[in-house]
Image: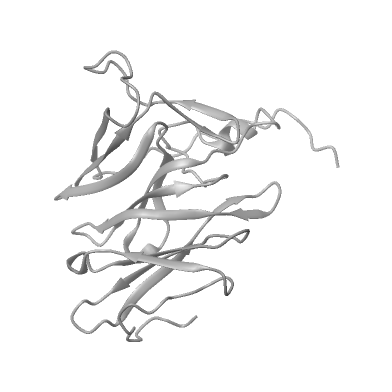
Length: 222
């Protein structure tokens, strides 16, 4: 998979899991990024993000992205809905995860790993998510689920991002419910369906505080 520096033909699938898989690509050339999400019946769905030079189509850098639960050592499916490149080269991504989305310590919803330190039965999360990658996809700088967001999209002005889409008062994945992040909304009650809107403004400047990892309060049964 040595893609760096290579020229990619247009509309060429990057990867396929099985002969039954289908490939969906989307994007806007001026963003200088290409996204690919792969779905197949009964197989793992892995997302690829490839940063291209839009003049030469040379690959600058790329990453493979998936959900993962370390306690069971099992990867899980993920899909990309929208992405864009910030002025400093960081890449913002929004999408959906079936289960066990990997969150950063400063996620907007308390991440699974923090909960797992004190609760061995803590539930991994899925659903709509937002990830901000460092330049060159070096590592996720921030990653969080967004409960209640449907069909999310991104817009940008400088270092500010706008996440928008349909709204619900909660999300549910495999029986695990999470309530929306929205507090004190202008509209006090959920209207139903997809008629309600979800809008979130994010300032991507600055760095998060160092993580506070609680002491583990239980012992492995092995």
